[in-house]
Image 1 (cartoon, rainbow, N blue to C red):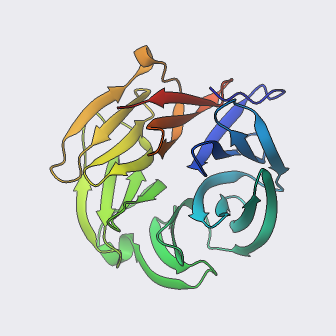
Image 2 (image 1 turned 60 degrees about the horizontal axis):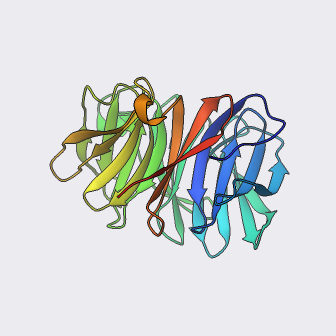
Length: 258
């Protein structure tokens, strides 16, 4: 478990595995970005932000992008050993809610009001986009979380429509997944080419989605210690799943998966 001392309430909307030993965690309630020792649970470095840190993603090479949704801003941070430092930032459109690294040069960013997903360079130049108007239907409502698989497929978790939307690198919709076991899909992570792990916020559980055949399987629930889950991260080296939560401490729970 990871606990932040001195914080009575937390709201962990972003987690990224930096290494088998370190996590990067955004705390929306307390306006902080923290680099965490996930072995001992201690905070190595933290930055107080001027706004609300929403989702984040690790870019590799010691860099990370953090989305501040109220400020309509993406901030880049450098991770040097156990130190965090601000690199640069740029503004994005109204109501950004999700972010994922597509590759070393591009990001995928989602918005609500209206629902929209953009592919952009790491400097903020929009390459392509899809929205409800272009799709001809209410495709996106609250596309809060995004993940890119190792094959380059993009998955968007929409808790408003209760769907997981799959897209290719051109943002063409290739498949939409719905399931009663995903009552309010939230955080999402790609574990392998045939497995996504999805937070079901409403039922306080983690489910496994096979994007090849669309099957959904229960994985972890309240009986295993899942409480008020929001965001997830996966470490392929240690086979550990990190679950960020809302409410009181601990901020992040750790589960070992085979």
